[in-house]
Image (cartoon, rainbow, N blue to C red; front, side, top):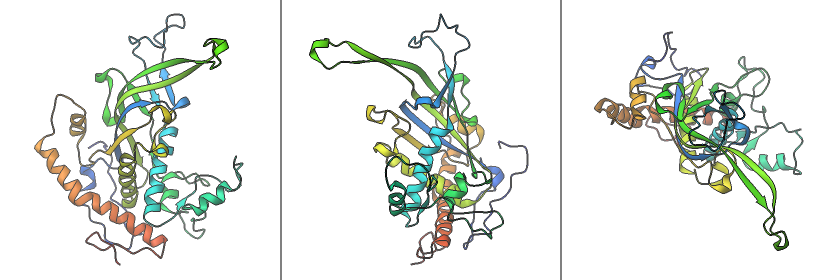
Length: 326
């Protein structure tokens, strides 16, 4: 569909269950997974890179609505948000998540690392089996990497955005959005100063973002997909919670994200149709939605449950019907 080379099958050899995907992998988007995003306002600080080469320095006015500024949103901001959702899913299942920081790091608060360990984390890399040839650890460690020379198993691409809809290709992980540079004055509260400005604050923001974020799996393991779809569902369900918002300026309503995993069974044309306001879903898309919702998604989540149970002996192994073995 999206690749000319042969697409490998999902590797289930390490799982204690049988994984059954009702559709061939080459009829899906894998190894790509597209996260649909709808964000009213995103203020990610240094996470926005703009393209301003068309306007000279003396002609550029950041707040001019006629400036058709395109750019990219850094995957660093997005990655932390996604990882937070993945951690919560693993912790809700009764397991601990791999801590993102080193235990000997210079933390601002005393004993913060130990308190994190008490709150559902294990030390970074402590899950790695030294006798394991691929140096695999827990599923969080697998996906996000960051230890030794083993890269994370999921590639988080930047989101390219443009205010011009026809220049947006959602099959490449792009979004329609509008960039603005906001300037605000911090003024004195002292009555004697009569509102005198103290300093100017400039912030880059992106508004009305609608499109996709493209994730690519380096290895096709079903539990990776299971964790990602569960994490996105968790982030969407808790989108207005302070710690689950994306980027900065949370107290100003920025970073509240409506997110969903776009059906991986869709073809490129069907994926574009999702974001074409002039077209409705076809009957074929609705059939694929039923297959994904009733058959595929549960299989991936069951694989995640099996992987989590295998790493924690206190958790039950899921049964073939999708329940647990308790």
